[in-house]
Structures are given as C-alpha cells and as structure tokens.
Image 1 (spheres, helix red, strand yellow):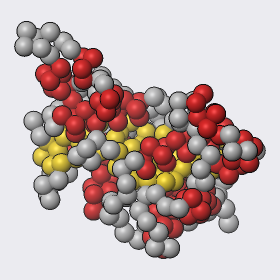
Image 2 (image 1 turned 45 degrees about the vertical axis):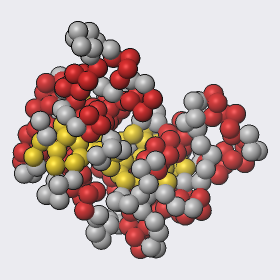
Image 3 (image 1 turned 90 degrees about the vertical axis):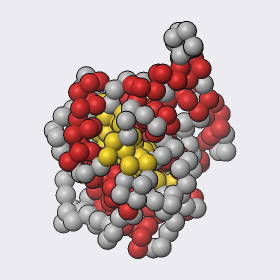
Length: 284
C-alpha cells in the first residue's frame, strides 16, 4: 500500500527520498554521488553527498533539483522540448538550468511540489537513481541505506542534532574545502536560509576560523575593511557572520557547520551546543 503525499514536501519526506537514492546506488554498486531534493520553489530541503563523490557533483545535483521544480519537467523532457537548444535557457538562468537526466519533478495531486536531482554517475544511472528516490516517496516503508560512509554519517549526526532542536533553522555541514556534505532545512524555516547556512559553513572551512572572525583577513594594515578582496572568485560565498564553526573529527579531519535562521549570535550558540553534545572540538 502506498502512502498519501501531502501538497507540500517536508524535510522527513525529502530525507526519505535521499535515503532511497543512496540505497539504490549501493545495491547496484553505482559510484557515490550527490543527492538533492528541492521544494516547489526550487529551494533545497535536503542534500547529501557520499564520501568519495566528486565535490562538484553537489551543485550539479542541486541545480537538477531546482530545474525539475521550477520548470516542472524532467531533464529528459526538457531535452526533447528544447531540441538541443537547452544551452540558450542556461544563458537566461545563469547556468542553473540543466537538461541532463537525473532531473525529476515530484508530483502530488496533479501538482509539482518539488524536484529531485542526482549527479555522480552516467546520465542513465543518474536517472535510475533519481527515479528510485521518487518511487520511494510513495511507499509506506521507503528503503534506507544499509550503511553510511563515515564522513557522511558524522555530518548527518551534526545536522540532525541541530534540526532536532526544533528551531526554524537551516543547517549545512561542509568538508575542509567548503563543499557541502549535508544540508537540511527545518519545515518551519524560511527557504532562503539554506544558502546562508552554506555560506557561513564555507567561510568557516575556507578560512579555518569561526565565520565572523574571517573578516580579519579582509582588512588593510590600517584596519580599513577591504571586503571586495574577499568576495572575488572562489570566495563568493564569503559571509563573516556568526554561525559558522570549523571543527575536527576523531580522525583529525576538519569539517565545518553553518547555521542560519535565528540571530547570528544564537546561530553560533546553537552550533557550538550541537558540536559539544557530540563530543566534537571546535577550531577557534
């Protein structure tokens, strides 16, 4: 028997889609990748990247989910509709729109309520993995991964600790280079908070310091702010607001967490509390 899907996606439903995609990839011995679920507006609800997956697959998966939700069509259908001219739409949308397979809309009650994106395998396997996630959405007992990669497992625990606090926040956990591993958005959190959380986490990871302290690298010897120097190129995610904390794992790996949704000071306090409860050491 299938389950009834509400008219709006929740984080729990989005995570069940991600779980099913990971399980399908594992069962079929497919390469590790990135898994994304967006809401009706294209904003991320849940994202995960397995250990060993190329970092750049994260943004590809996210853009696939965004495309499926906002274009209300699969990548395969868009490829047919545009007749090989999809690149023209990419110019309009700043490179975000993709017609690559692995791009699937989520439909409930005849309405598109979100999108699924997967990246990391061949185009055909990206599609199969995304389809497995969609199919699981309608099952009473959606499949879960038999195991999780060590870094992804830890990142999940950090994100879950923060979400379970019940606050209207978005959470991002990134690797030492700032690439996302896990991003979740609580059901009561504003859609735009995910990008803020990710930027805080990126800033903490890239500068190896709590995010608000990164501003010390963007001042002249006279103490004058030179923010423009810190926001060029790869540093476009630079956001020196409290709420991004780098931390070390038991294996001496550096990760970082970003929280957004409360005041910046409250975001930071929530992040530190979550890390402390898991026995993780913040870098200060």
